[in-house]
Image (cartoon, rainbow, N blue to C red; front, side, top):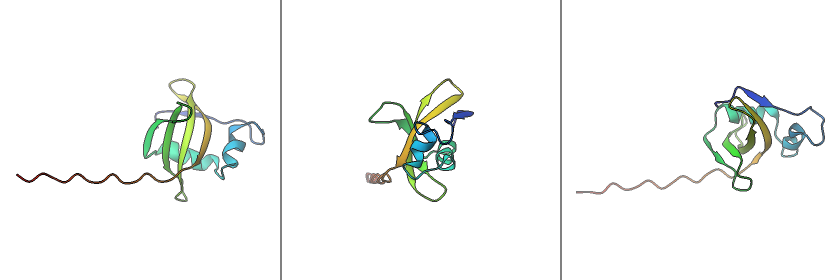
Length: 96
């Protein structure tokens, strides 16, 4: 991850991002582990915000959607479990 700072709202804030990810049975540690070592990065299809996909320490595959505040700082918007991506079929080599 290229960001050095992750903004989290106050724990217990009912409108905050910590409580929101907890509703999806995730912790700050789960989310940060994916942000540090994502398996894929891109954009959320529903919001267009930047997103990272990866595995939590206990092996769940999740998406983390965040807002880039500046080049060093992000704020997590949401995170939740998603189906693992299907492996792409390998291309057969053409014989000459």
